[in-house]
Image 1: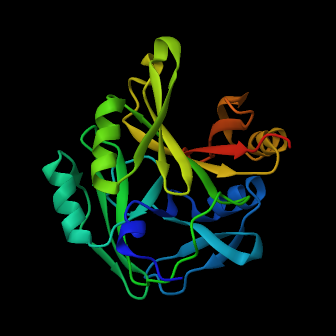
Image 2 (image 1 turned 90 degrees about the vertical axis):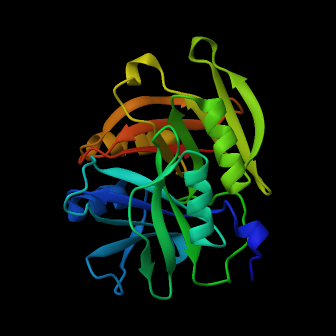
Amino acid sequence: MTVTASTLLGRPMWYELMTTDLKAAEAFYTTVVGWTLTPFESSPQPYTMFNRSGEVPVAGVMTRPEGMNAPPFWAMYVAVPQLEEAATHIKRLGGNECSPVIDVPTIGRMQMMTDPQGAAFYIYQPAQSEHPPEAAAEVGEASWLELMTTDAPAALKFYSEIFGWQPSEALDMGPMGKYHMFNRPHGMIGGMMNKPPEMAHVPPNWQIYFRVPDITAATERIKANGGQILNGPMEVPGGDWIVNAMDPQGAAFSLHARRAQ
């Protein structure tokens, strides 16, 4: 399917873990999420793709580059039709670039940016124009994007301008303020909220939720394989279940299970 520039803009396309122990991370996530592994042979350094069922690649993992002053973390890649134009737009709105442009033959061009509050993400200009249609996440795919920030209304305005994400409903979280949700054309894809006081020391960041069949079983696998539960499991509005966790190398991630039908 050929994707037009208007539907490509703002589409989350890829997720990537920067870690300190590649083999340990591979073992942890294949057990916890149920992914299989495929080496990406075109990479100049070891790079492994995580696949959902059907051997469909959904994310990647690599060793954190030397000199990168950040703990292990998950990052998202969001599509743009033209990389330089998007980077210029981001900087004009108060964001910054924090990597050079990375060119991967046959894959595309990408650059790590930060929003005005400091949360990091990649912009990505795919080399191919053929992409499957957007739809609700399958088991093993990223199913929700969550920004923890210092100014959620400002962040929502920023991402709406650069990616065309559409503000949706806002859920009142009481003392924690509002949880601002946002949509792509096919439906709701994420939310933004101000960090609670106990997270004051944590920089603004994007959390990636991956879909699993059963949250209770997945939570037990996290604990049994050296991960740490940060929050949950808990039921969220609508009846779905989530858990927020940290892998053994210190990267935060989250899991999501649909409510029983």
